[in-house]
Amino acid sequence: MVMDTLKAILLELGIEESDVTETALLRKDLQLDSTETVQIALELKRRLGVNVKLEARQDMTLGHICDLVVQAMALNPA
Image 1 (cartoon, rainbow, N blue to C red):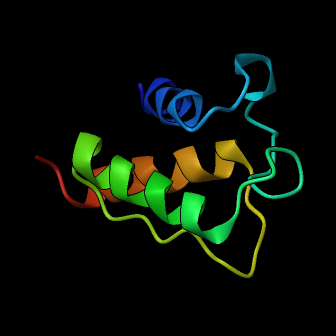
Image 2: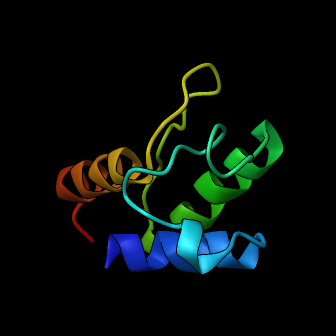
Image 3: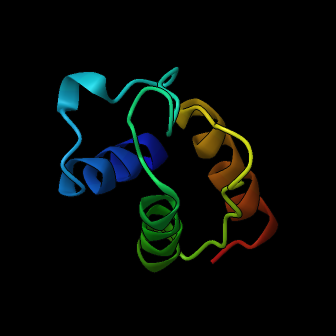
């Protein structure tokens, strides 16, 4: 569910579906800038109700982001 939501957000940002994998890095592989990273965090909050801090200084894989979202959801059950 989390990866599907993240994938939908990335597709809306114009990322090719074939590039959306758990090992893809936000900046290095997907070429996302800090503004787009903030957009992802805001959309995750809007769609899943969780605050996730996406580090600006550290490139993160999509799998790591999914793990952070799952952890945040476990801490704040709806």
